[in-house]
Image (cartoon, rainbow, N blue to C red; front, side, top):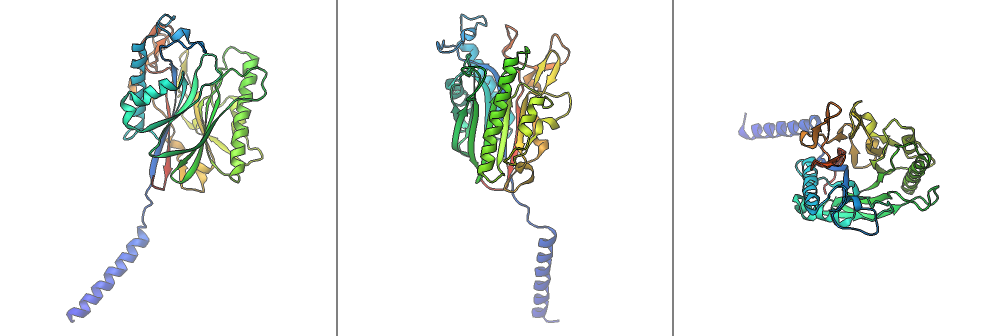
Length: 346
């Protein structure tokens, strides 16, 4: 057989082998993970007297003997948790509750190890009498803010509204639009009917605003509800957020899928899952380049953020205070983390 014929045969075999390999081993779509984090950071106050709010408890002369040193120590401590929660890179979105003002958040992102992470801030003072707010830190190299608003109920039995505002932010992430609603609902403890009525009003407000977003996008939208709901996934009030109204929006409570007995807050020895994340069905079934694996939702419960409970056996979050005794920890809540997968570059 001539050398030319051999070359032609070998070339044909190579072409057939290449086509066959492409059929059997198709190109794998490259994906990118974006981490979302929510954390109630437990009374993140500075040591300056703000005459507009009731912050006397967290002043050098207050009952907790809060000082600038303790404030800066807490600021650094919080940053270490955010860094650890991010793993190889800082989370793209970080929702926080119980921050006193914009300054404490700016100190967190400018004066700690987070300063190189490129965080920008969404913050606005809430009507809460203690001045604690909800806010979002976002990496502006990955995330673009299209708009944001803070909502309060227009008609409540408590006049004027004196609680945390509902934060809505619309982001552009990897060429898709993602809508985040951040919450910190009033406490359910104490059995006060007025408080329960207000909580229901806020839940209805959240659902109303989310339905409007879904309707504007033809019934499908990438929507996240997150925050401290002061309720567990099985509490009846949480059903308000899942019900399918005229918009066709279906919200899935990922926190309800976690193992029984786990939680973000420990009350009298019992773990409660009160810091929750719900996502719209589109994150799970498409269409679009964004998706979420429900199993990716998890509680950040590394050993260094826990301590042995001296009263109820077992670990509890290592908080800043235990009662009025300063212990220099992080928060009485644990953070929750969610990974969002995108098939597009950012």
